[in-house]
Length: 210
Image (cartoon, one colour):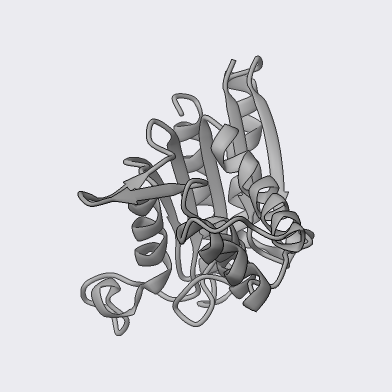
């Protein structure tokens, strides 16, 4: 029995293209893997702490070998609890829209909070070591434009959405990564519906062997 963690990053819910595709994937996944468990993290409903001076003091206390104060221990306990689902899951699924060519700020906040030494990564004199190695991941990307090489917004210069997530996967040690791309959602209702249907079909097929 495997654990799948689904991280939802769109606040649009019933109107969201990325969530529509993710729900199609999850329905097919449940049918194909009935013994597995699925946990959902909606970053818009999480009580995310501000990663402010107090959190930074807690972070650097450990990095410098200094005992944390009770206040710092409480802050780090909350951060560790937020990271726990990512650490415990065998498989990760992210559904995320593109915002200003990148990821939603709420997802970035979540990633910034949980991506800490000895939680999702560590390092030594040889370099960085991700702690999520051995997990599978799927990213479902929704974007209003087209990012092909011949478009006005080619991925090489404009796509900071998939580029950022690919970097984060590598940083945390995840190398088995799949992606579903849902583009042209702002090209009118016909293009939007066609893109959603194609991405849903791709996600359903992927779910059977994920």
